[in-house]
Structure formats: C-alpha cells, structure tokens
Image 1 (cartoon, rainbow, N blue to C red):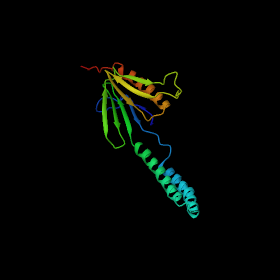
Image 2: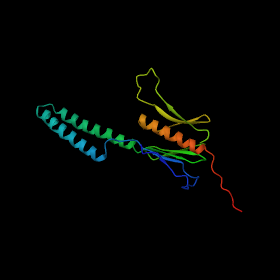
Image 3: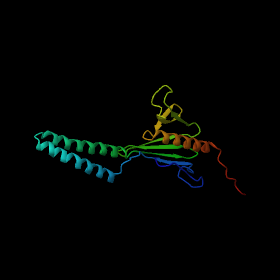
Image 4: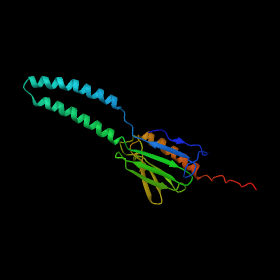
Length: 182
C-alpha cells in the first residue's frame, strides 16, 4: 500500500481543498526481474531432471517438467495481472470519493458525505483460530456499505482505518469562513 498522504488544506482541488488522498495498491513481493531468475532457475533444475528420466525411458516425465514450468509461469502471470487493481481515496470537506479500478482498468466511483460516514474494521471473532487481524475494512453510511482495501495486509488495514478516521474528524470540523472586508 502506498502511504496515505495528508494534504495541506491550502492546496486547491476542483471539489475543495483535499484533506486526505491515498492510493492503495496490492503488494507484489517478486518484481518481474526476479520472476525471470525464478523461471530460469526452475528450468535449470527441471530440464536436466526431465532429460535424465527421458534417457531412462520414462519420457512422459520430461513433458510434466515442462508443464510444471508453464503452470508456475501462468500462476505468476495471473498474480501480476491481479496486481494492476488499485483504489484511490480522496477526502474533502464535502465528500469522500472512492475510486476502485479493477485489473482490467474499469473504474467505479463511490461518493460519501463525510459527516455521516463510519469506518468499520471487521475483526475475527475471539473463538476463531485465525486471529491474525482484521478481515475487512468497510465504509458505511445511510445503509450503504463499501469494502475497501481487500488486498491489504491486516496491519495496513488498521493503519488505513486510523488515518481515515483522523482525516474524517478533520473533515467534520467547521470550516473557517472568510470575512469580507468592506
């Protein structure tokens, strides 16, 4: 997750001064250059093993070694494609806009009025063995519920919830009115 940025109130934006602006992206632990090394290493181990079994007369093993390489590559490719998804949260005094972009580039925008908005962090039940952290982070308002940051780690969800609650508190504060000088 890229870190949420708290913006200076004096910075103008089309919908008013930005209070909070965060870009949420899924983490990928292996960069594309690392994938090349993994694939070359895997091929370097499986190709000689497949050739060895082929010389013993077990020729189908060679095909299965190639199939394993293909399946690992397809798995990583699917992971990188799903990593293209991201979410953008922008908060002003008038609204919180959440833009969710999927891996195909389709974007859905959701607008919330900050005054009524609640940040809900759903923790696992006390009796469950999965006590690693929050399962989901949701925004709720007037019967609407939007889950955000589903690709974040539990600690990142907690940090985002804290930062968003702080920013919402700032957004709910009365704005200073400009006085006209006569």
